Image 1 (cartoon, rainbow, N blue to C red):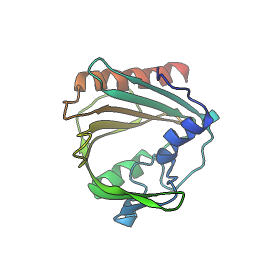
Image 2 (image 1 turned 180 degrees about the vertical axis):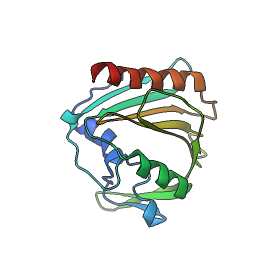
Image 3 (image 1 turned 135 degrees about the horizontal axis):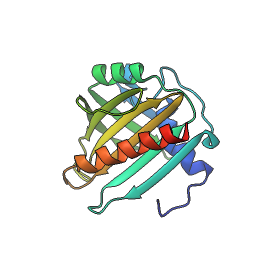
Image 4 (image 1 turned 30 degrees about the horizontal axis):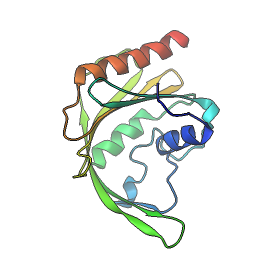
Length: 182
């Protein structure tokens, strides 16, 4: 589990990108890719009480996030966006005044094939921000089990390789957990 309190504001900050809700002052180029990480075709409002969030750290300092949403995702829209939006540039203007801009970051996305699961629908994406400081990379999974949305991310830092076996185990466990609870 995460070593920080998962209060309502924290949960909302974690789930908002998946719902298409963007932070004030955030811009994405190309603009039609603004919803690229969302699980839905249009922005939706999801309350923290409709989400389960687990976060933690692995043995090799990788971080993981698992989110289960009590809302049916649009996995076809997710797949289409990642096929179309293979590279985006995001910048954020920080408030309050005087406003400062966080350096824009370009992120590359690649859809991966070949993973078999018990999910009704699944898309796995390699996420690689061009961030010379953190040198991070992540694998993302967007899945649908019945009317539930599942998101799993395993992220590494400082150029460490992603443990694909660990990612596959986390994803399988998340999907199986929702199936058992369903």
